[in-house]
Length: 362
View 1 (tube, rainbow, N blue to C red):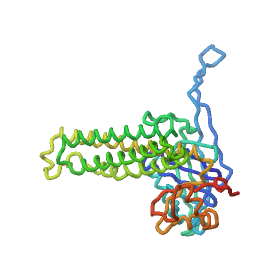
View 2 (view 1 turned 180 degrees about the horizontal axis):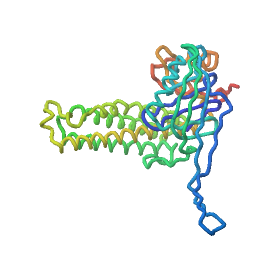
View 3 (view 1 turned 180 degrees about the vertical axis):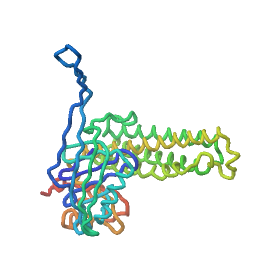
View 4 (view 1 turned 30 degrees about the vertical axis):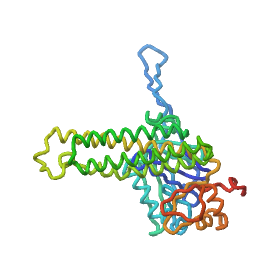
């Protein structure tokens, strides 16, 4: 995952694959302790002066980080970003962290070069005022981030390879959708979710394919293609979120519109359950693919990118440049970096903020 200097990043590897980046006054307090042990099974046999030992593998000790969040420092700053969107208060930030804990998401945490994978086992909040909270997060680790990825994720960072992976996911989603349509022609809720998800994946596959073709035609430099592909991974993650939610609401014995529950056979219910399960797996695998490849792509341009940013309502490049660099006049540098022709931004549009050195600054 991308680890920008002086930032503390929590990246969900399951669920909605959200990415929380803390910098400045939102950072945990230092020092931050990471420790580990080697697990071993030692056996002493009678009469033998030397024990036998079986190494069971390395283990990572839990880590507790602490800090304090104040709305007056967070509001209007870039100190706390969730998927590039600015969080506006200590309460909102605490709610997001607690939501990750409550949903039991697998996370990858990065601080400088320190990377760990695990989950939030405890989040304590000590509210001093409605706007100020002292907090502590306890992480239970399962690895140092070197866990082997699922087969759906191959070696990352190659936009052509990513195109093939997304195309494979889109084809799998269409197969599930087409099979369900033949079996359950009246299952509107089920078919709608599967069709929407398959179409969303195909749309992202088409966009990535367009990016690859522009590189092949020497229209788009590889670094620009990498930034564009990273943004398209965000689109992928968001695109299948609604179909996933719709599938979660499908009740197998009530999925056929206009048919009484009593007339839905056990076989139909089982087949519907399998369709929901298969569609859910394809969409979740696609989200995981998008999250992993986005971070891999960002690593390739880590030296150029300060951070990703998702525009809010009313934002334009001038306001962003003022927040980041202290001068609205630098908006053209952000525009050039993102291949934009004006300062206008749409709400929800993702851009990359270049480091000052990327455009000749200090």
